[in-house]
Amino acid sequence: MTEPLRRARPTAGTVLVRYLPFLAVIVAVALIAALAPGATNSAGPAASRAGPLPLTFGQAKARGVKVNWGPNCDTTTGRVAVPLTYAPPCVPPWHGGSNGGHTAPGVTATTITVALYQTVPDVLQQAFFQQSNSEASLAAELRTTQAYVTFFESHYETYGRKIKLVPIQASGAPDDDVAAKADAIKVATQIHAFASFGGPDETSAYADELAARGVLCLGDCVLAEPDSFLQSHAPYIWPTLASPEQAALHWAAFVSTIAGRKAVHAGDPAMHHQVRRFGVVRYDDATGSFQQSYRRFAGLMAHQHVKIALDEPYQLDLSQAQEDARTIIAALKHAKVTSVLLAGDPIFPAFLTKEATAQDYFPEWIVLGYAYTDTAVFGRTYDQRQWAHAFGVSLLPARTTDDANEFANILRWQFGKGPEASTYEVLVQAPLIFFTGLHLAGPHLTANSFRAGLFSYPANRATAPTVVHMSWGHHGIWPTTDYTWGDDATVIWWDPNATGPDEVGNQGKGLYRYALGGRRYLPGHWPKQLGLFDVARSVTVYHSLPPGGQPPTYPSPASRTTDG
Image (cartoon, rainbow, N blue to C red):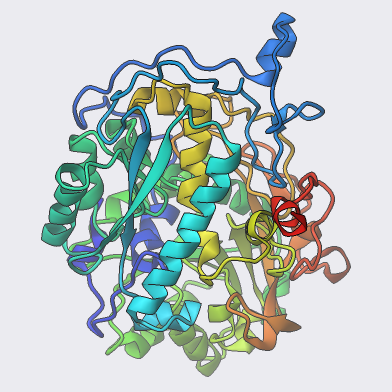
């Protein structure tokens, strides 16, 4: 189940690269059982034991230890003094001495080598991110990533080491096992990297090989790998997206909340008087690789006393997508499904919704937003008579304008100008994880001390609409050890009449609304009232950050440089 794309590539030949993780996450996320037991770590050489972690601000305060925290610490908050809500706790400034030198592959007394994995954008990626499919776009991404590295390096503790960022261009397609393995070997044996930012995530080969060679892989390195994969490859794989089991817990909570009630949001008024009857439309491959996963998900629903009336798997074959949609819609109608749980890619719903209208079938469409079905870019391509009745769950934070986006603003704060690459929200993720772990790991940097550092990141922070609640390790949030950074989710619904820019800046009609202002929920904290289709208490795009999502303010280094 770790390599679905290699078994079921679209016949249209489209390569879905790392920024658009469509098929890899379609069912592996929505239909994997929650609570899979962790596996024993069998990946890679034995990671060196973690040494003592640095004293954090909170620990020092609790123990009554006096520390000169230096200019990079805000002693009113106890966090690093940067305008970033994700800023970690302060640690004592490093004043020299031995940091252990060569403590791990890619680490010396003065440098840490990190590979930046880059793929040439394909046609679909260009459509989403408006890139040029050229070396120029890769160069812009490299410069933007380097800008983030410089920002973090200037304020987070690195214990006397500088980061050496080395770009590596993919030698094959994102689902090419042979090329991915060769690239990983190059990263480990020629670049001699401690970590890689990203990878060819439509195959696990790159992550497998790096972990086997003791190299970390962070960010969009893998997608939709189950918890057992992360446990068995620990402490080397650090994804940004929630694991399938984690996402499934959110979806189970959401569906159980709306189950047993009437389908009042369906497009067919006759369904408003019917108790919701759920059907699942989900991606699968020709061999039915995800059938067992579906059965386990159905078991989770049964545990919540939710019955699934119909299971309709499909393969994404664009040459016969319309015919597949016709068959699926007919089956949903025959089964009297009022509410469709959509666990699919962002392209097939265009066929489904068109065919539903043709067959005069207007159900509720419940979005399990893990594959960009929760973006306006694709929502606008669906039949709007149908999508006006779409709602569901999103793991993404509420949208902001670029002017309000804190990941853009930290570069403006540092350098006086925003990010060059339009993909900055993707590019920042791996550096954010990396420097958080590095800062909290202490001077003796190894894979295990990096893990211990991330595990010590405090999880007792409030949720906010525009911020993903971030934690790793054991904080009572997840039932197993957490190796992903996102913990919370929000409720969305489609407003076909809302106007504004989509995720790539195209003005148009139709946007997702974030219910109750984008209020986010941790596992086990889902409410009974979700705020669905309540326009007055919803938001489409924040033009300024809401309370709780506003980072502290500090004098800008760019301003000081300009004044000087």
